[in-house]
Amino acid sequence: MAWLWVPLAGLGRYAGFVAALVRAVRRHGVPGWSVLEAAYAIGIRSLPILLVIAAFVGTNLSLQGYAAFKPLGGQRMVGMFVGLAGVRELAPIIAASMVAAKAGTEMASQVGVMRIREQLDALEVMAVNPLAHVIAPRLLGILVVLPALTVVAIFTMIAAAYGVAVWQLDLNGDTFLRFAADGITPLDLVYGQIKGLFFGVLICTVSCWYGFECGPGPEGVGQATNRAVVTSAVLCVSLNYFLSELMYGGGP
Image (cartoon, rainbow, N blue to C red; front, side, top):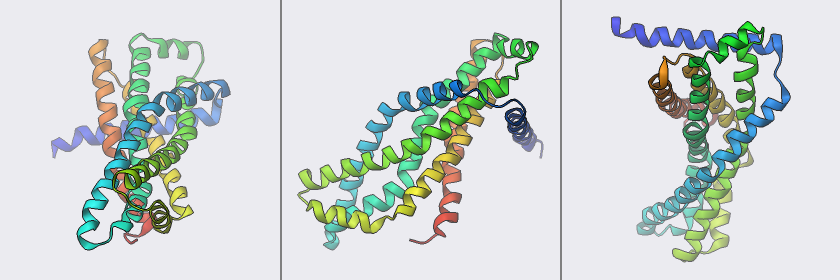
């Protein structure tokens, strides 16, 4: 059972980090201007790659849905397929993955560099809590922008799928939109944003925790950055299953 010790010890340190972060925010508050800076850095810088990925995922959903339904004579149901697969599952995961790949790595590397340069220790010497002034703004920033990025991914995906369905596959646009609307509800959009909030907490806390825990030198920062993005992606995909089970009960 010795192989369990390392992940359990890491989980315990991560839980302690999150608890300390909550206490720091309650005691010291969060500087508002830092939240705006973090939101801009996370949201705007992640937007271009998110738009590209969401658009191409939407086009592939149209093509694959058409190929699956055509032998059954159900080509008009492509819109419903895009709505169900894209809005409920793919859009939140794509948004989280792109933010983890772009902003999560930046957070891990920035905090890691501050650790090896002893800047975090210097803040503590000056009686400035690094959790409240370095980590908390990033957490609040990602909570602001990730739900919004999820909505952007949803509409980008549907728009790209619509374009392929109408102009390449020669399907009726009104029929596509009608079936897409039948396949999703406003509650699905709310669920997507709730998923974004959970994913944002995971991405930020995991990335910043690895930065706090990083080893000495550039090699330590590189390892922390790599572990942050891998762990964030795995946890978000795993959490998505449990959230979908809770929200949809395993049914349509």
